[in-house]
Structure formats: C-alpha cells, structure tokens
Length: 166
Image (cartoon, rainbow, N blue to C red; front, side, top):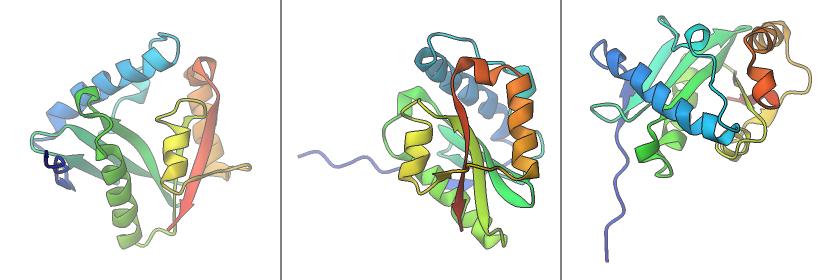
C-alpha cells in the first residue's frame, strides 16, 4: 500500500521565490489555453503583480503560488497557478485555503476573484472552495472586470466575478 503524497508546505513567498513565479504562471497558462481552445492568453498586462498585498507559494522550490491584491477594500485572489506536473494533488486548494486564512488574519471580511466560468479547474473549483458568483460586482470589482474585457479575456470564454465571505 502506498502512502499518499504530502502536500508541499504553503508559506509566504520570499524574494528568492519571485524569479520562479513567472515560469509557473506560464506553465499553468498553457494548461488553461488548452481548455480555451488553444487561445494564447494575453500575458504582459496580466503578469504576476510586482507588489501584491501578499504572495504565497507551495513548496521549495515553488510548484504553485497564490497572489492576493486588494480590490474595492477587500482581498482579491488575483492569481492562482500550479505547475501542471503537480496538478490534481490538492496544492491549489491548499493555496486558496491559506490565502483565505491570511486575508482573514489581516482583517478582510471577503475575498473576491475573477475567473473563467466554464473551465473545470476555474469557477467550479472555486465554488468547491466556497466562492459564489457575484451577480452585481461593486465598483472596484466591476472596474477590474472591465479591464479584463479590454485585455481580451472575455473573448476567450465567459468570465465571472466570485466572492467568499471570510
């Protein structure tokens, strides 16, 4: 009988981790592009934020990361990326749970995100983590969705905003 693999430890990113994150993001984006009928995602404008509210990584060296910003006075999960070689092991869920805990610890009362509605490892995954679709996004989240549309993301697939109460 084989032992289940231990999840990589989730921790706050260090300056040394930052160089690995664009590579992780690009690898995860290739998997997403495959789901979106082989579209190329607009990368330069949506690159990992340079100064997010906080950044978490899984593993050392990192095999996944979560970047959290602030939008409309609430925490916002801007990016979640797990290298495809490590997909399906619970790393993304661990990162989301750690991001929620960290945001709650910083006094935030909600966390939002924007994602593709019909990609299985996007909106359905986030729903399984407790996020719910936001029918009427507030001013900050609506502005972010408008920015995403201008960057061409909506042309790749239906996008939605989601939120979880902390």
